Image (cartoon, rainbow, N blue to C red; front, side, top):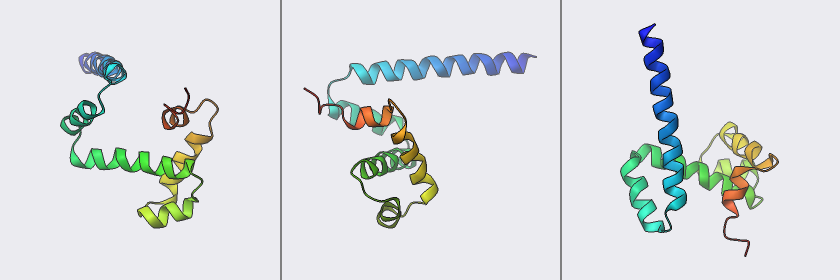
Length: 104
């Protein structure tokens, strides 16, 4: 029973931390500071994974075929399909982030 309570408490702490992280990133208006922060926060492997996901979503958005992305980036079609599926969703957060700054 104590372990379940600890797991629930840990889950709430992590959820709150994620919300705080999102708010901090949204409040920051300095790309260099955000980059430095992410360098401190993420391991090199995590940085690579996040950057790869972002790059593949950008390629899909440009109309590059999944097979071409797989060839150029050395990724599995499964990983690329996930990004493609997310972009196709109505009100896609990926699409919104990709096109920030294009309006206005």
